[in-house]
Image 1 (cartoon, rainbow, N blue to C red):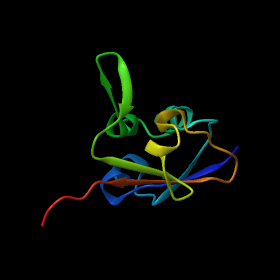
Image 2: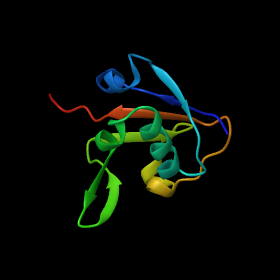
Image 3: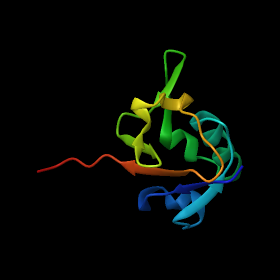
Length: 94
C-alpha cells in the first residue's frame, strides 16, 4: 500500500531533499519503520524511547488525512492505501 508522507524542510536531509516520499504500513509505527529502511536516521527524529516505551517526540506533530494522530491512536493509528501523512515540527515563539 502506498502512503504519501509530507516531509518538513528540517527533515529533508534524510530524504535527499524530497518534500514528499512514499511508504507502506498498516499503522503509523509500521510506516515509520518503513521510512527508516529507506531514509536511515529519520525514525530517531520522529520517535523516542522513554523507559522502554516508544512514543512520538514531544515537538513533532503528525497528521493522517488532517487528523492529529494523538487523537486517533498515536503510533498505532491505522493507515490505508492512499492516505496522506504530514509531519510538522512544533513551532514555538512569540
